Structures are given as C-alpha cells and as structure tokens.
Image 1 (tube, rainbow, N blue to C red):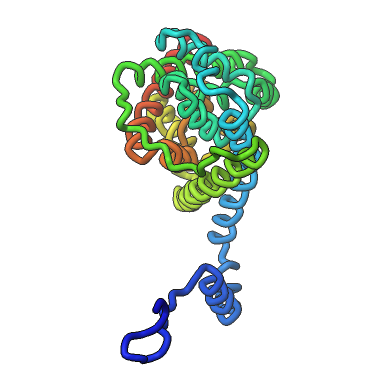
Image 2: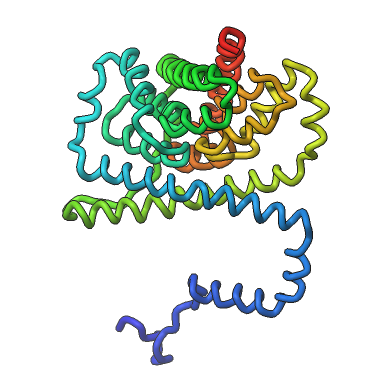
Length: 330
C-alpha cells in the first residue's frame, strides 16, 4: 500500500527538503542577529556609493523593462502569428533598415527593447531585423534625441550625429548578423504554455514570466555595473582625456560600465567636458546598445553564446561609426 513501509514498519516518511519559505525565514533570522555588524558595514562610504549606484540603475530601468515586457506580451498574445514578418519587406536585407527605422517610434530605453526583440523573433521576424530594432529603439527615439538637445544646447549637431550614428550602427549590425549569424547561437528560454488560455489570462501569464526572468538578469547587470563604478578611480579618466584616440575608447568602455538609461546618458556625457565631442558621441552611441545590464538581459533572452558574440560586434561597430560620424559632423 502506498505510504506504508514494508514489514509493517509504519508509514514511510519522505526526506524533508527546505523550501523557499524556510530559506527566507533563515535569511531573515541571520539578518536580525547580525544587524549591528551589517549597520557598520553599510555605513562605509564606498558601500554607500555602491548601493546608491545599484539602486539608481535598477530603479530607472524597471519602468522601461515592464513597458517592454508588456509590449512583448501584447505581441505574443494579440498579434497574429506571421503578421509582423509580413509587415516587413520579404527580403531580409531590406527588412533590416526598415526595422531599424521603426525604432524611432518606440519611446523606451534599452531594457524594454530586449524582451520586445525576443517576442519579434518568436513571431517570425528575421533575427537580423529584430536585432536592428533592438539596437535602434533606445538610441534614436524622440525622448532620447530631445534629452540630447537639452543636454547640449550649444551643439545641435550632436543631436543629428547621435541619431545618424545610432541608425547606421543598428543597420550595420543587423546586416552583419544576416551575413555571419547562425540560428543555433540563439537560445530562447522556455515560456509558459499559453495554449487554451483566454487572451487576458495569457497576457498576464506572459508578463509574469518575462518580468521574473528578465528582472533577475537586470539585477545581475546592475550589481556588476555598481561594482565597477566604485572600483574605477575617477582620476584615470582625467589622465586619459588628453589622448584623442584613447579617450574615445575610454568613454566607450565607460558607457558599458556605467549602464545609464539612454534617456539620461546625454546629461552625463555633457558633464564630461574635458573630452572631445567625438569621444562623447561614442559614449552616447555605445551606451544604449551594449552595457553590463544589457549584456545580462541579452544573455537571458537569447542565450549566453549569442551575447558573447553580439556584444563585441556591437561595441566595435558602434565605436567605428561614432568616430566616422564625429569626423564628418563634429
């Protein structure tokens, strides 16, 4: 009989395993018992800076992430399969610039564009076009360009340069994926089975799954960005600003490390007045396309193998385009 041990030894007792509630209780008890030590630790200046940077990255990214997740759920539930693929040109080489140009109509940041790009791939859009949209949406939308104009009131060419460089980079990376990318590099995560659910329950199920999944990678990216923020001495930047070529690479790398939302990065770039306009353009072009939190989100959405290839290609292309556009316009 089920649940009874052999030879009349009584009911069998399964092996107990701690669940999430038990783990949470233990963690809370440890926090309470060590609250004095934790208070002294958290009072350290560097740790206060670290926590401030981490919280600011996550807080400014979460609303846009939720917006992107909601839009992704709308695409997954309400848009008929194949509709988006039919809306783009049938030739992938033409679909890439059209998808990149469509990024101008989505007022969001990079955190929201990643889940949307994942939904586009699932709904039949060629990956190259989805990736072009992923890069262009946070780089050339009206909010980003308006904030750039406000941050650089004396340099209107910076707005044109940022929009043009962002669009060109998106198209070039899309075409590069079309030429060299492989389908087996993309590993889309499993999703809840929405078959048989009504539209709104399916919408909420999709939202819950994507928020938990993408939110975890956002936190990982924020932790890494905050750690590097407090470990890179500011004096290094001042020492490197006098070298025109090295300063471009430094600000491009700084954009990756800082992981600032694309709606706010123009004000940071404007404050780096010791650097040339071209170097600051590289900061503005690279930041919305690849930073630490974005790398984590891309790895969680498309797979680590994809992110390890896509991120370096995007970085090199963005820097090269920023230098070329800066040389012509700035």
